[in-house]
Image 1 (cartoon, rainbow, N blue to C red):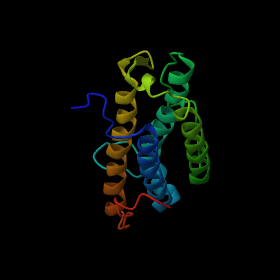
Image 2 (image 1 turned 45 degrees about the vertical axis):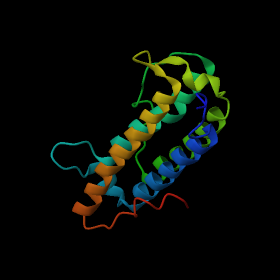
Image 3 (image 1 turned 180 degrees about the vertical axis):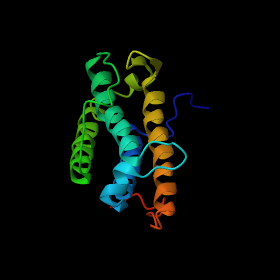
Image 4 (image 1 turned 90 degrees about the vertical axis):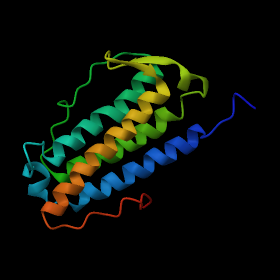
Length: 160
């Protein structure tokens, strides 16, 4: 038995993550402008706030991992007022993710990194958290869209 067998390459992991980002972008697009910023259920945050959390994680976290710097989590640095601003920032962060992800060597995925000075896990676990967090919040977006009478995109259609 080969103890170093690879289940998933780093490139496959990035493609998987970007597939989720493509789908989340389509969920953002599906929201009416006003509801993106104001609609919520049961005291949960509006979807725009959930998206701002995702924006504050992916690109900034990968940059920290690559640079070896520990920066505080800051989801209040970007304060959009329109869906177009959110989508533009989402696309910018997608490019930043691509840029920095490709700079992480295979060995670094196993190294422990103290993300945002709070989450000390191997790099691969942090990246899996980024994807899990996005899926979780996108699920909330699906509930909001359905409550608004809007059919969300199929969750398995992750490519554009």
